[in-house]
Every structure is written in structure tokens, then in C-alpha cells.
Image 1 (cartoon, rainbow, N blue to C red):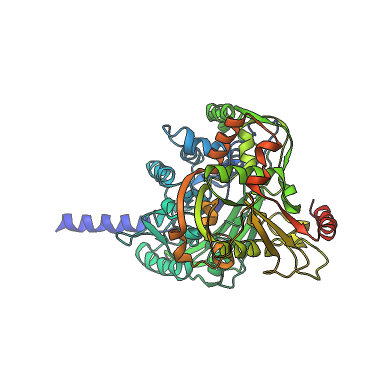
Image 2 (spheres, rainbow, N blue to C red):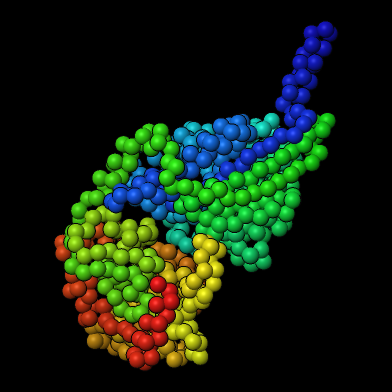
Length: 576
């Protein structure tokens, strides 16, 4: 009996010691998102310093030193594994070593990482490997709305609890609900994705009832949005406005620097590429073992690229040198400058190169392609592997699809409607003067994203800037001189991103139901950057004749030429 009483007392004391002590507890939440492989403070080709995780770590260590590491949490909201030479190298070149990202975030003592859409886009071989490695480091790779098709459970980890600042902290993480719209199903096979509304609230209610935390953090790879509940890929403010029992929402995806607090909940988005470190501060008053009150705030800490953690830099120097050697590998030569901005005024060498690689690599009759770098330049001279990341920054595969002539015209009409202003507007291009929340700069910018400004090769056509949307495209024939038939089927090359329906060209423009897109696919080819690399190796010197042949690429232009050329030139002056 005495022994039972002793055990009972010890048990009660142990349980009591696990709860929060009375008093004020302050938790510091530090966040990053959309770093896109910006791990090293130095580029691989030119001298100079840039914002990176190595500079972020300087600030993280400073805050841990000042406020106590036991009072600090560090979370990333996704898009970690794509966007830079280093991430590409450890995704697809050095696949034997432990992934550099896994080692970096372990070194920095991240508490949790959220799965981004560009992380999923790397493919199962990459993100499954990283998930296993992170798990070995005790870091969850969170994506609770990616649901397995076989058993209905989350494919990635849903949550993890922590002890920080004397409190029990629950962290839940979710990837973007709109993932299937941007990539082929082979990249996310075995799972499907659920909307964050109402799933996050349902999970919060269920798990808090079980875990009984004092602090709840929700990290989502979803854009800030405007809180209207209508955009599947932008549910940050939707969550901020509706969630109950949550202290912080960490959002991402749209590269928009944003923080807000209403006194009960705060939202943080640090933008992209390690320009800012998110900082949330939560003071929790505990009375009689229970939460009596909370005070919350949030902000962004500008990351000074010069404040690099020198010890961290040295720890990963061998990795940097491996990526640098890879990036500087000579692959050919370029006879002329390639400027992506030239794509906005008509045919240009840059887009012609992408079209030619696509037509050749996909054995296609027609190609669709867009400028994927807003304002990049590759100078004439020796080409190195690093230049491929400017020419083609994304890891998109090349696909060929069956489209009718009528669907091709509809596709192009929709594309140019994103690109051109309506008749009567003072501009030819669809541009606007505004304060861009992504970079806090005032100036002129396109209304739409330039990576959705597709043009076509393999046909001859004109785009009438004086006609309204839907009535601009006139196709006179195929590039080889044969007639163009609206009812005939053609083999059309495009990116895997576009083939999945992204941008709306196939669904809204061509009018193909989303569930029919998979049936239209003829063949899947390697990544376009890989095909581009092979093309450059084959030709050695890339000149005008290599990137353009009228009998293969065809001709397209804006008409009436005098109106279009003068108007577009004025608009480009405003933009650039």
C-alpha cells in the first residue's frame, strides 16, 4: 500500500512537471520560405555576395544567443529543393551523398520544414530521399493535406509537438492544394491533395484535443491571397481570417513579403530567397497551470547579405566548390546575345531556341513556349552550364500532346489575351503602374506573369493588336508550306507544367476538359534543360541558323506592324 502511494505521488509530480509553470513565457518564432536553393552566399560564376541561408543563420544564432535557444523555433514554409544550381546538383547530379539541404537544415537546427509545390516537382526520388534524411535528423517534412490514395493517411508528416519556452508547441504543416494543376501526376503519384479549408481547422481541433498544447503554429505552402476564399493556391489570409485556436500562420508561395496580427493570431510571409527572416513573438501568461492570456506580434527582419556566418560557410565549403566546378563547365559557344525581354515584342533568338529544341526533341509539328526569365541576358561567347539556368530556370519536362487546329488557335487566343491590352487602351501590352507587394517597388509591370506569354512555332500566323481578345489570331498555314486545318490533329510540344493545365491555355483557351488532358499526352521526354544541353553539345556554336529555320519554325508577328511596333516600344520603355 505504501509503495502504491509512493508511485502515485511520483506519477502526479511527473505529470505536474510536464505542464507549464506559472508566469510569463515568451516564444520567438523564426521563419523562412521560398528560399529556392539560395543556400550559399556567393554565386558560382561571378564575384559578389547575395542573401542566403548562411546569412540567415547569423541572425538565427544571434536571436538564440540573446533570448535562449530553448525559447526559439525555426520553421520553413516550403519551396526548398528547386531554383538554384546547388539544389539541382544535389537533386540530380550527386544523388549518392546525403542531400545538401538535409545537412544544411540540420546544421541550422530547423525544427520543421513544409513541403512546397516546387519540392514535389523534383519527383519522388528526390523528395522521398530528403524526407527520410530529415526524419533521421528529427526534422519533420510536413504536408498533411497530401493524402495517400491507398489508405487515406497523410503521405508526409502532419504535425509534431515541441517543448519550447516552457510550453508545449504544436506545429502542423500543409503543402499547396493546387499542386495537380502545375505538374504531371507521375511526380505526385500515389497521393492527392485536399483544400486547406476546412481541413486545417478540423486537424487543429482534433489534434489540440489530443495533445493539449499551449501554442499552435500552422505552416502552409500557400500564397497570402486576399482572403476571399476563392483561390485554391492562395489560402493564407483565408486561414488567418477563420482559424480558431491557432497562434501563427506561416504562409509562402507568392513571394510576397507580408505580416499582420489581429491580437489573437499573426500571419508571416518572408517573400523569397532569404531576403527576410520572419519573426513572431508570443508571450503566454500561465496561471494555475493554464493559459490566462497571450500577447502576439510579428515582423520581418531584413537579411544583410554581408553578415554571412563564416563558420557555416567553411563547414560547407567542399559542397560549394563541387557546385561551382559543375556550374563553370564549358558546354559550347553563343554567337549572339540572348535577351528574354525581346520576347515581348515578337519573335526573338531566345524563344526561337526554346522552340527549336522542343520541336526537335519532341519530333513535333508545333511548339508552344514562353519567356521563363523576365529580364535575363546571356552574352555572346563561351557558354557554361550556369547559363542554362538563365535560359531555362525550371525543371520542366517536354511533353507532346494531340491538339486540333481549332484548339491550337483557342490556345493562342487565350495566351495573347494575357499579354495584350484591349483595343482602346493607351497601351499595347497589358501593363499597369502599381506598387508590387512582392518587392515593395513602384513602377510598371505586366498584369499577368510573363511565363504565361506563350507563342507558337511550326505555324505562320499574325496577332492583330487592334482586335479584341478571342479575335486576334490568324493562322495562314504550317511552317513547311502545307495548309492549316482547324479540324485536323497535330503533334504539339509544350512543357509538363503547361500540359498539366497550368496557365489555363489548354483548359480555358483550347477548351479541353481538365480530366481529358492526360488522354491527350502522346509522349513524355526528359527535362527541357537536359534537351537544351544536348542541343548545344551537338551544334557547338549556337548562331542564328541553329536556333531558327523559317521552314521549321514558321513566322509570326504583331499587326498592323507600324501601330504594334511603336506602341510596344513605348510600353517596353516603361517596363524596363
